Image: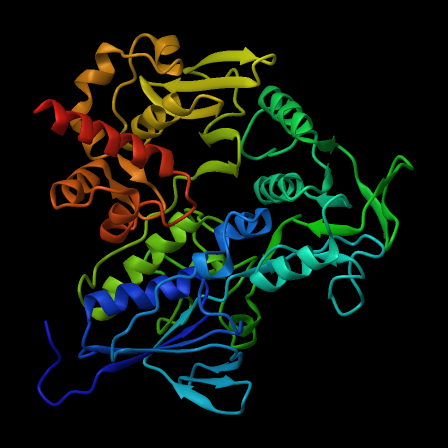
Length: 483
């Protein structure tokens, strides 16, 4: 499809060059490579090119360099990117965006992909009156935070992580891998309170203790003393040369709010990803959709793809229906997957099967309702995690032998569901199915890197690397055997 003869391309301005804003530009370039229908201008406050923020804990751990986590930059006439540029005001009547250099950008459609920033708790010493981190304190939201953290803490030094969610635990694992002495403080009764149940958290904390990370759950920070450490509400002081704050985020909604666009904790959007101003859209961590999705990369990338199809005219009726979150903890030596309903025990019609192996550092919990997987916590059960995630995605009937399923053993029902499994997502971040990976293999992609180039699988959170390699190994084995 091309533009009407003589018509100029519509102008789209994207505010935010993070993972979601960059994906929108990439999707738009793919759908309209010559820029005939739309021209996209991306402005980003960071001076760095777009990069995979999900892998920042890997940069801390030394598993990646900043260059290795960079995202593709569209090389097409329809997309321009300006880094180190901040949008300061939005005029919805004139349809212009004012930038910090005093210039303005006109738009036909505006996409807010402004993301979120770290939330610093009201603890003495953690942040100054201007909201900036205090002496010896850093968040872990961008590459500058990584560089600040690595400058503050050296091998052998004590570091405190404030926040025992996914990011805090990934940061702790990376820091201890660098030779630092790490303490994690979590105000909830247990770590990863939203994603896993208490028995799983207890075993996970023991796994971390074996790595050299001390976990302090249900403890509140009282004050940060630079050069000394973090004082807790019970009077104890945890030594720390640096404090890493991973205690939640706040959406960057000020630009929209000042322009009179409806906001709550995020910029409110509907299934079309439109705000209260139909010409302004929001995606990613700054967006508030009834179906959720903020804080997770897979929904953000799905939103970017949906909006790109709408605004280029490739699929003007495309809609975003909400998220089905799945959490994978990216910590070397620890395999943890969690999704769905994991905190309900006695709900009507809910069956649960649990395996607890504290000595082996393993835990599994499966929740089933109406013969379908509706939730699971899997610590140290990677084979079962892949199968259960597929059953969760496809809604296929769960096998009668639940215990065999958790143990990763073959089941008759699982074999019968091969057709559904073929369409199950292997890479949830990029919505890549098993069928697509098999097709890429048939087209000549024989390595994980080649599969990533063809399909984008493994380029999100990295949690599917094991599954993709297992698929490649299986397909290679079948080819060798002449199947």
